[in-house]
Image 1 (cartoon, one colour):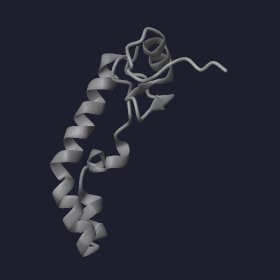
Image 2 (cartoon, one colour; image 1 turned 180 degrees about the vertical axis):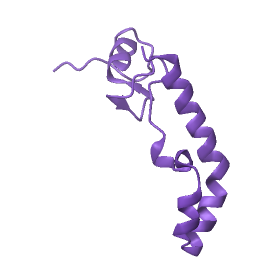
Image 3 (spheres, helix red, strand yellow; image 1 turned 90 degrees about the vertical axis):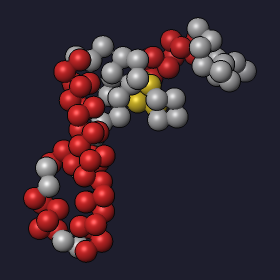
Image 4 (cartoon, one colour; image 1 turned 30 degrees about the vertical axis):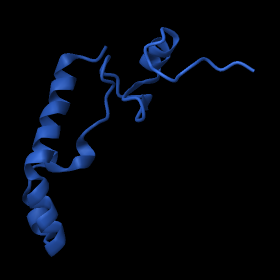
Length: 89
Protein backbone atom coordinates (compact mmCIF):
# COMPACT_ATOMS: atom_id res chain seq x y z
CA UNK A 1 0.00 0.00 0.00
CA UNK A 2 1.32 3.41 -0.95
CA UNK A 3 1.73 6.05 1.71
CA UNK A 4 -1.27 8.31 1.96
CA UNK A 5 0.99 11.34 1.42
CA UNK A 6 1.87 10.09 -2.10
CA UNK A 7 -1.79 9.52 -2.92
CA UNK A 8 -2.83 12.95 -1.61
CA UNK A 9 0.02 14.63 -3.49
CA UNK A 10 -1.17 13.01 -6.71
CA UNK A 11 -4.74 14.23 -6.06
CA UNK A 12 -3.42 17.75 -5.55
CA UNK A 13 -1.54 17.54 -8.86
CA UNK A 14 -4.72 16.41 -10.63
CA UNK A 15 -6.62 19.40 -9.19
CA UNK A 16 -3.88 21.78 -10.35
CA UNK A 17 -3.97 20.29 -13.86
CA UNK A 18 -7.74 20.78 -13.99
CA UNK A 19 -7.42 24.37 -12.72
CA UNK A 20 -4.89 25.42 -15.37
CA UNK A 21 -6.20 23.32 -18.30
CA UNK A 22 -7.94 26.19 -20.10
CA UNK A 23 -5.00 28.57 -19.60
CA UNK A 24 -2.54 25.94 -20.87
CA UNK A 25 -4.66 25.27 -23.96
CA UNK A 26 -4.85 28.99 -24.74
CA UNK A 27 -1.10 29.49 -24.31
CA UNK A 28 -0.35 26.45 -26.48
CA UNK A 29 -2.68 27.74 -29.21
CA UNK A 30 -0.83 31.08 -29.20
CA UNK A 31 2.52 29.23 -29.02
CA UNK A 32 3.48 31.34 -26.01
CA UNK A 33 6.10 29.04 -24.51
CA UNK A 34 7.40 31.72 -22.16
CA UNK A 35 3.93 31.97 -20.64
CA UNK A 36 3.73 28.19 -20.33
CA UNK A 37 7.04 28.16 -18.48
CA UNK A 38 5.65 30.61 -15.91
CA UNK A 39 2.82 28.26 -14.94
CA UNK A 40 3.35 25.95 -11.94
CA UNK A 41 5.17 22.70 -12.65
CA UNK A 42 2.25 20.63 -11.43
CA UNK A 43 -0.03 22.25 -14.02
CA UNK A 44 1.39 19.86 -16.61
CA UNK A 45 -0.77 16.75 -17.13
CA UNK A 46 2.28 14.54 -17.54
CA UNK A 47 3.13 14.98 -13.84
CA UNK A 48 -0.02 13.14 -12.73
CA UNK A 49 0.68 9.46 -12.10
CA UNK A 50 -1.78 6.63 -12.74
CA UNK A 51 -2.34 4.90 -9.41
CA UNK A 52 -4.23 1.81 -8.36
CA UNK A 53 -7.64 2.75 -6.98
CA UNK A 54 -7.40 0.16 -4.18
CA UNK A 55 -3.75 -0.01 -3.14
CA UNK A 56 -2.27 3.22 -4.52
CA UNK A 57 0.49 1.32 -6.34
CA UNK A 58 1.87 3.14 -9.39
CA UNK A 59 3.80 0.39 -11.16
CA UNK A 60 2.04 -2.38 -13.02
CA UNK A 61 -1.08 -0.20 -13.54
CA UNK A 62 -3.74 -1.56 -15.90
CA UNK A 63 -5.65 1.32 -17.49
CA UNK A 64 -8.62 -0.76 -18.56
CA UNK A 65 -9.38 -1.82 -14.99
CA UNK A 66 -7.92 1.15 -13.05
CA UNK A 67 -5.86 -1.00 -10.71
CA UNK A 68 -2.44 -2.62 -10.40
CA UNK A 69 -1.65 -6.09 -11.68
CA UNK A 70 -1.57 -7.51 -8.15
CA UNK A 71 -4.94 -6.09 -7.14
CA UNK A 72 -6.38 -7.12 -10.51
CA UNK A 73 -5.29 -10.72 -10.01
CA UNK A 74 -6.79 -10.92 -6.51
CA UNK A 75 -10.06 -9.35 -7.63
CA UNK A 76 -10.31 -11.54 -10.74
CA UNK A 77 -9.72 -14.74 -8.79
CA UNK A 78 -12.37 -13.71 -6.24
CA UNK A 79 -14.83 -13.04 -9.06
CA UNK A 80 -15.12 -9.31 -8.34
CA UNK A 81 -14.42 -8.23 -11.94
CA UNK A 82 -17.26 -9.19 -14.31
CA UNK A 83 -16.27 -10.94 -17.52
CA UNK A 84 -12.78 -11.90 -16.36
CA UNK A 85 -11.96 -15.58 -15.92
CA UNK A 86 -8.77 -17.50 -15.39
CA UNK A 87 -7.37 -18.79 -18.66
CA UNK A 88 -7.44 -22.53 -19.28
CA UNK A 89 -6.86 -24.46 -22.49
